[in-house]
Amino acid sequence: MSSSQAVTPNIKRVGNRLVVSHLQHGWLDAMGVEVPWIVSETMVTDKRAVASPAASPVVSGESNRAAKTAAPVVSAPAVTEPAAPATVGSIDLSRIDLSSVDLVQLSQTVQACERCGLCEGRQQAVPGDGVTNPSILIVGEAPGEQEDSQGKPFVGRSGQLLANMMAAIGHGRDTSVFITNVVKCRPPANRNPRDEEIAACAPFLARQIELLAPQAILAMGRFAAHALLNTDSPLQQLRQTTHAIDVAGRSLPVVVTYHPAYLLRRPVDKRLAWEDLKRIKALVALP
Ligand code: SF4
Image 1 (cartoon, protein in one colour):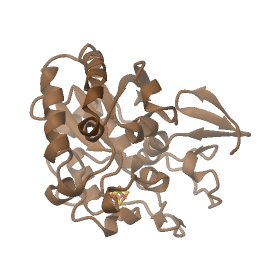
Image 2 (cartoon, rainbow, N blue to C red; image 1 turned 45 degrees about the horizontal axis):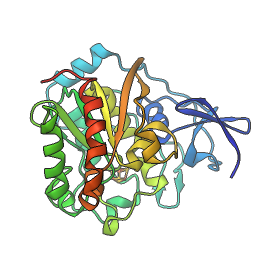
Image 3 (cartoon, rainbow, N blue to C red; image 1 turned 135 degrees about the vertical axis):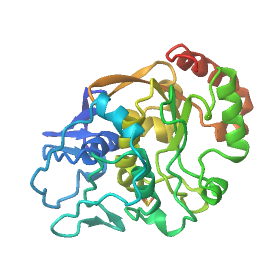
């Protein structure tokens, strides 16, 4: 593996190249911005030609709010197709311009998405669930069997535990929380999501963060933490501090904690998760 050096929390230098996280590449992708000198971690070996830039303005806070209140649009947004098909394995890496997409359109686009192979085994995609002006955005790993069946994230025992955890700090998905996952479709047999699947889905998560504009993000489990923070550090280490990511010109705090499915298997670590919950509670206003 080539040696890397951190430039910022979300950008690393590998050789003479700057490498951004899946999510940061997703933000650029979602905004319709191509930055040839920055490549995502899974695209370091991608030799495809870079199309000419078609920059769109970064979504401001004002336009975020306008997008939230926009009337639902029935038609799905147009997807920008490259001049020539670009694929890695089964992954379509064609650019998708989400810069003018609101939450309703984003959900429609996710439901119809075939950007990675996870579309083949899903009953339905799971874009997310909760209020559209959340205090806390919860990011998990991937839908499971019940989520795939019901089209909602965190249902079943994990969902009940998550609801209890949120209630303990005065929050809930009906009042002040939005819940989503790093990948929106269920991996076969609940296997871990792969790097290329996380990269393919990153523009959706990036655009959700912009549109939802939460006060803080709770990353549950290592896949969410690694995707958001562009690191492969152990979860236990990432839990020790409050992180920050830049979103549309503002710094957004990120707290890392255990995934509820892990806590169901290892209840003794709930006391550690409680410390994380207290930290994020202090960062946001009560509903
Ligand atoms: Fe599309 Fe994401 Fe589903 Fe892959 S996981 S098909 S990128 S919505």
